Amino acid sequence: MTSPMRIRARMAGDVADVRVLMAHEMETGTRKGSDGKIVPAWFIQEVVGSHNGKPVMTAQWGPAISKNPYLQFKIKGAKAGDKVTVTWKDNKGESRTDEAAIA
Amino acid sequence: MSMNRRDVLKVSGGAAVYSALASMGFFAANPAMAAWKKEWFEAKSIADTLKAMGVASPAESAELAITSPDIAENGAVVPVGVASKLPKTEMIAVMVEKNPNMMAGIYEFTPAADPDVSMRVKMGQSSDVFAVVKADGKFYMTKKEIKVTLGGCGG
Image (cartoon, rainbow over all chains, first blue to last red; front, top):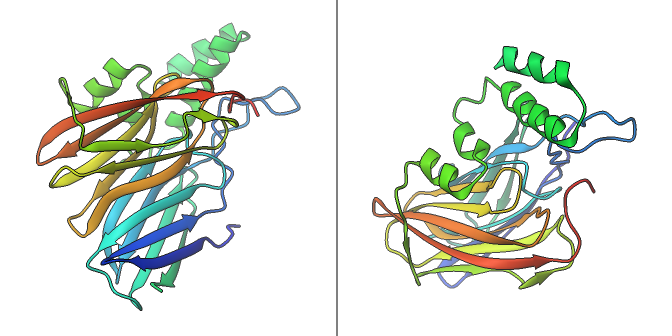
């Protein structure tokens, strides 16, 4: 089960400033749980940010990204009302897509 | 790889073995993610990472900026921002030198995106943070030291 992302997109001059907060454990795979066993790695590997359906930024992440990841990126040539879509995919193959309008 | 894991399992015990096992285990568990730059994330030193990326010796550039606090109180969440003013920036890679695997994130941009990203990373201890940027086919880099008062691993 995945929780929705919080996406804020706002115009700053002629560039849209997009801030995303994802809900994810981001388990490194090097940490031991209370039973002394390694907690298996579980982290987001890929994030795609799209503007009106066109990908503009692709991120690949390792487990060094913090739990409940925060990501900020900027889109050129955007205007208020445009659609911003963010998709993530983790190492277990789970994925989630959320969208927001630029304010 | 699987033979290797067996051997490691038989030896068992010891922190080094555990971490080796874990890194092999979790990378081997994702054969489906072919697009994920496995070699980039597996590298354990700056030289290995640059080699995996196919970069010889990136030039230091003043057009790159790493934004972060000089001292981070909590290593589990260290805010890091990287911005490039170099024309035609295609990619920004962020690395934490003293983490078990250096690579934290790779960001690729189309011309419609401003090469300016912020994220939060885990840091086990105080370390240099490197940003390697590809712009117009060439590689550039910059670094910044971030001191951590409380480690972010094992938490």
